[in-house]
Length: 311
Image (cartoon, rainbow, N blue to C red; front, side, top):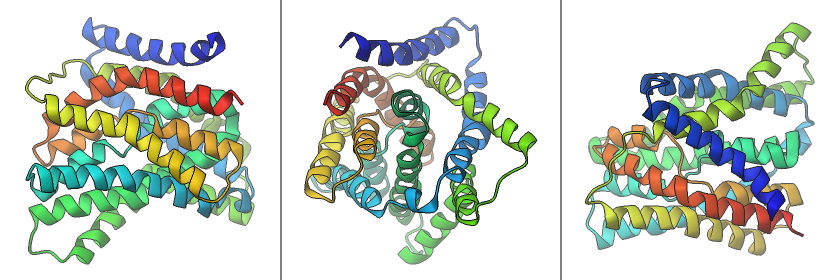
């Protein structure tokens, strides 16, 4: 147990440092947003390209993992969506955004440093597969449902196609695509380029955790107790339970893939949740959910790490 906290303790300490640095104006809040853009535009795509390009394509393509993690994420999404839509009479877009909070993990900024410390570069294959589930399956579903409320005249397939095309152009997905192409074609980048990629990839952990803490500054959550409890409970309890259930009922995975799936599902929701919610007038609720989810994830992450590494 002591070694467990020696692993996760520094993770949350860095989050706390980021929070205090922004709270005491040692770093401006706008600077934290720049950190986030740096991570998703340069550092994380570089890490994904490096991890995938160095591996055989057969090692990377894991349809069983995609099925298990995808199903384990769709279950909490569907439950929270139906609760918001049918039981609380929320409009389609608000229901989709609320359900998003219960099924999307902070894979990039909290998940990456933890699984990399635990499993090294081997963890980056399931890490990339998780990002594919979130960005190519879950995100199109959420945004299509939300956009259908905003543009009721559009056909569902047209909205889905437009959303999917936009996501394919994001740097993270481009990093995955280029990494897969490099693996398939056995291409090797020139040494100076690889050195740059290595330096970018090495910067992810500390910068990501600092940015998570800084983004929590200034969030208010008065009058949102019911919504927050539903979102946070779904994310931190139902999501990992659904993934664990799918792991037991589905095909047997490599132990590292199994461990990464459980640990990533125990993360709080991702940091840009509030930015996405803002577009649908849900920014305050989405931002407010980040505080209790991030604080309580200290428990769920430690439980997930202990459960997956104790045997």
